[in-house]
Image (tube, rainbow, N blue to C red):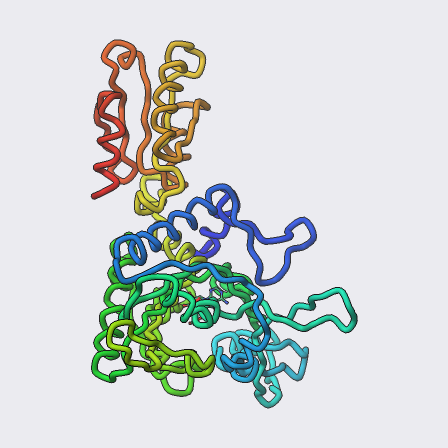
Length: 427
Ligand code: GAP
């Protein structure tokens, strides 16, 4: 099994990610997140929100509707230009993205003969929906990027808060794309979550370049601070022909996945493209100066981050599989075990410890099998610490805390447990 297969199997076996609609044969490009997957994604989103909104004075949050007035998509250029190049195999009529040379080569080798391809044509990625109660129903769209909800509310945010340029608006939410070739597990899906910052600045070339570089560094540092291996991360500049229709220039943060380098986050210089198209502008409350701000955008995928954090965390050592997720991302922070499940006094004490810890963290409880097996089960889902209540705990009110990565054990007093884990989480 290669790493992608191992992660896909582990994700299903342990409740991180399931194929959507599986009992009816699945649905290509859609995925469901299980009990552990939802925790991992929530933790990624929480860390992002903390660093992008709570720890900054110059950024406010937002949450726009998924379906908006279709005029927005006309003005934003998405109905015309949000396209990928599509070609069709003349032998079997399967359709592919013309720019995905590796997929085309694989398809040719599957046929085992020379394949003829149709001319490449532009395929629009917007997902249509029909709304209303009278016929014909009104055509609307599921948002292809979460950005536009923020852009069209620019003046609302300026007028209802004390923000002053330079400032940012952060948002996390679902986006939908009718991808031609969804694949590589969740990497390319048709429904996915984005976490985006639109940072509004004065329309000045030098300042915009500095801001672009600043956000590139912030975003790269964020992934590294949460444990992604820096050797597997890089920036890649977009060539002119691959740039999105709204971008003056763009660079991706890429991760080296088993299937090659893949985009994790895009940093875009959107200039005044969006605000100008929506006829919106900024008026400085003090100087009265009016202008159309420029926008530097950071746009990351929550699902791609989850996938890359899982791939990066996967280790096989000493016959155990261990997910070395950063403790702040791990679904469970701590697991609590009574040494023996059939000794009431141990179970009672362990339950009391569990109760205290679960007011602070999402905790696992396990009293099945032997301690070794319980450790292995927690290692495989990335739980950083396991706490065991044993007979000595009944006398000294202390527990054994075992560290996932080093497998080292230390004795900690129950009353100091929360503080101690809190310090470890800050590290
Ligand atoms: N507002 C800018 C924007 O949407 P993008 O580069 O098209 O930019 C940003 O998308 C991020 O969204 C990507 O870096 C990726 O992490 C995520 N993303 C894009 N398409 C995706 C897909 N089909 N499946 C999963 N994630 C996707």
